[in-house]
Structure formats: structure tokens, C-alpha cells
Image (cartoon, rainbow, N blue to C red):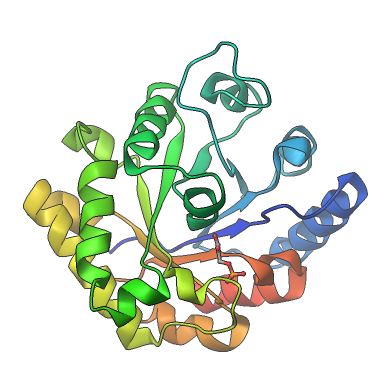
Length: 252
Ligand code: 13P
């Protein structure tokens, strides 16, 4: 049995006071429940230090939304894995479709980031997923396969299990169009089979695969009930403590 995992990707939202408000409210809700689900929040860089203070004495874990592939150097505006680690960050989202699209991140660059994150003891949340055009052209599986093979190139079996995979169909992100539980399950199963063929059965059974794309309290439970869906990477709905909390409870 894989423990369920729910992570909130805040994207470019929440300033300092809004960060305090959101985390306090979430902590308050969680304090009345002993949830088994692992829960992480991924605020923007500017809120990481504050978030790391606020989640002390709670079960919440901290994630970042990006990391650079180089350990340090002249990369104006970038943040290194070592810097993240020094703020108590445990997870880092890598390969999100918004970074692939708006910042032209390639599979090769994503692969370098994953390796760098692992070197500094961060756990990558590695995102894959097809666009609407690719789905309509019948390319969903080949696109996801390529992203997996190139993204995981050179990553050992023991390092693989530090990674959480997130399947986020691009057409479902921020659009209100969720993949149906069966549509999502089909791709999650494919990803697990792919991991089995690149690595082995044991790794494929252990690795967590999250679904992301318009997850809401109304659809979370049916998605999380699918055999190969181990939780969710939540965008819009994690900005509201009530809906994020409801999604966490759906994973229980
Ligand atoms: P939405 O939940 O807003 O569709 O975003 C999903 C996502 O991109 C999480 O990383």
C-alpha cells in the first residue's frame, strides 16, 4: 500500500500576509484530525522561509516550485538546490508544464535539475503530461513516455524512489476540465508499466504517481480511488484552505 500524498502548488500566488493566513488556517483545520495522508505545500520562493517557520510542529511538509540545474554560479534570478535545502525544503516541483511552455524547459534540462535536486537531498515532484493537441493526435502515451525516459535518464534505482511523479495533462490545468478518473487511471497505469520496464516491478509498485489538473473537492475522491493514483498535485484549489483541506480528507 502506497501512502497517499497531496501537494499544493501555490504557483505565483500569496504575499507575506496571505501566506500567514493560508498556513495558519490550514494548520488549524489539520490540528483536529490525525491524517495519514502526507501533505506538502509549495509556496513561492519568497514565502519559503516564513512557511518553514509556520509549519514547525505540524505534519505539513515544504516544497519549492523550481530549482536551477547548476549547484551555484552566475545565474541571475535563479535559486539553487543547496539554498532550498537550507530553508528546510524537502520537495521540489520539476518539469511543470508552465515551466516547459513559458520558460522553454527541455526534457534534458529537467533531467539535470532532477539529478541536482537529488544530489542535495531534495525530493523531486517530476511532472509529465500531454497538451490537448497531442491528446487529440493520439500522442498521449508517446509524449509521456518520452518525458519519462529523458527526464529519468541516468537516475539509479535507489534514487528513483526519492522521486514522486505527477501526471498533469496540460489541457486540464487551470481549465476546470478534469481528466475523468478512468482517463487519468489509464495514463497512471501506463506510467507505472513504463517504470517497470525501465527499472523493475518493485520500483514500479513503490513509486508514487500523483494526478494534477483541476482537482477540486468535488472530484478528488473519485480520482484518488483509482488503483494507480496516489494523490494529487493541486493548483487553484490549494489557495483556499477549505477546499485544500477537503481534498486532503478525500485522500484519507
Ligand atoms: P489546477 O489545479 O489549478 O488545474 O493546477 C494544477 C497544477 O498545475 C498543479 O501543479
